[in-house]
Length: 290
Image (cartoon, rainbow, N blue to C red; front, side):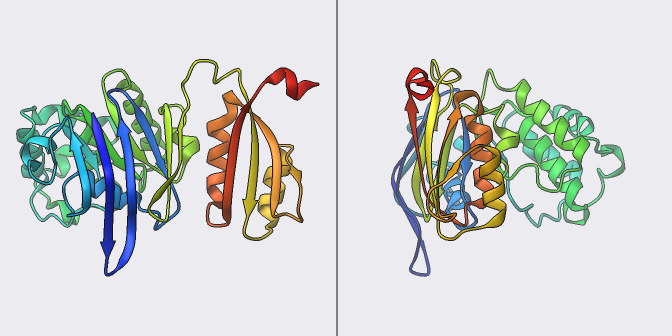
């Protein structure tokens, strides 16, 4: 459904995406992870046709850069940073609904579920809303449409706890009929929603892990972690997972149950700035227990 073929992108001679090859099938729900500067947002912008780039990006064979109106009509998108739009909220909602031939009331209904008092802000310019209001409205626009693909870039930013809970409940309601790409620093939050994890580092895919394969929950995984320097917080965290320190806090070995794999990866993602290497291999549980 979605293909990235040898996609590269440079900004001022700095390589931001470096030969990305990725296929995303219908119904796959991707957690796109990586540290700041890894290339996550740039990859998303290439998917939306906002950037020129090397290589090729297609959605059902169509190139977003050349057929933006047609392609974007099928995508629900929540950006990392709200756009500086000056149009009134009512006009923005009407425009967004019209692009995909949906009804404005559906968008407003989602906004109300997120706790937004829409009647009070319909005449206000979008750029005059608070950060939380903007985020709720953008989520409502993305989820209040019949979008086949949801692309969400740090979507829970600026949401209060109650709205975060509602947002993830709304996503859970869409699991059966949507393809999702969710960029997030909080893998633990999105773990129940996704069936694949893709990690970017310096513009390259360093991990592509399908987590819903048959037997994954019963499997055991041997994990080797290498860090650039020792850190007390990492030591406490990995000790709690019963990992063994093999080299003065720089190398750690241990095992993780399949059912805990995403939760463990979410914990490790907190220290991605210090993580030099991660290896994860499936093991026969009988061998580990001997």
